[in-house]
Amino acid sequence: MNWLTNVVRPKIRNILRRETPENLWIKCPDSGHLVFYKDVEANQFVIPGSNYHMRMGAAARLKSIFDNETWYDIALPEVTPDPLKFRDERKYVDRIKDARAKTGMNDAIKVGYGKLEGGAVVVAVQDFDFMGGSLGMAAGEAIVRGIELAVEKQSPFILFAASGGARMQEGILSLMQMPRTTVGVQMLRDAKLPYIVVLTNPTTGGVTASYAMLGDVQIAEPGALIGFAGARVIEQTIREKLPEGFQRAEYLKEHGMIDMVVHRHDLKATLARLCRLLTKAPMPEVIVESEPEPEPEPVVAEIIPPTSDLPVSAPAPAPVAAQTPAPAAPSA
Image 1 (tube, rainbow, N blue to C red):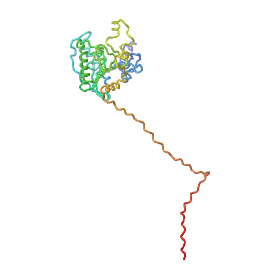
Image 2 (image 1 turned 120 degrees about the vertical axis):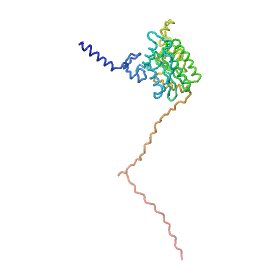
Image 3 (image 1 turned 90 degrees about the horizontal axis):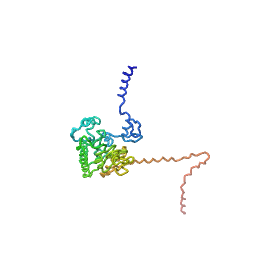
Image 4 (image 1 turned 90 degrees about the vertical axis):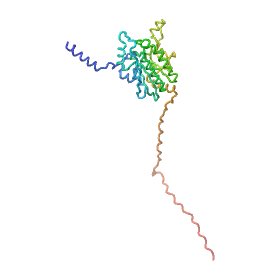
């Protein structure tokens, strides 16, 4: 028994652990049901059944927005990685290395340029998996670079916000990105270009207090948490109980803080329609294929064969020409 317990069983467990991916199943935060990861991924990270919108990575988000799932990745300016030599429980540079290894991104924001239903757009996406999508110098540079590209290309600028706020490890340099990105938004307005913001779960802190709430059109995904401070902090400050659903997308729309709540499956079509309306671009021609008219059926003459009971008439005689009488002979 000791040999089976101490040697064989651990080997079997290691084999099963290697063959089973860690993310094979996902537990729905809303219903608590386990869902197959591939089904969620194929459904744009929306849980089938409960309709809960999971967080979506930057690459997957860009893939779902651009035509033919293709776009140009925009090279972003380099910044000083750790200007304050910050350290809490761990070094700030170590946290950045871990986030880069986890997401494959250089920082929290990815910018792409491509076609959205035929129209050129610039799209910036915050990835919450990169240190909570926090706003630092690199993220601020990414937003400004995306805005500059939109002005250069005379294209709409679309931003997907997902953040816990400013990156405290960079101190005042992080907070400086709030007014800096706000000035960038003003560049879009001066150029008369649309700025559309999509608020995803969660969007909080300094991001909400700056560029995330300055869009010409404010869209939110269903159930997204949107606010500045947390609900518990607000309740402790005002010493009142907050209403149910406070800071959720539906609550904000009901109280006029955002323009619309759009399901993720309808997001691409909605963004394309808004871009056409705001840029006065021609709407795509809708071709309605009419059903071909049915060919007329051939008319067959009905022939009734003669029977013995019916008299058969003889053919009529041919007409005879009238004979003119010969003239009389003259008398002697």
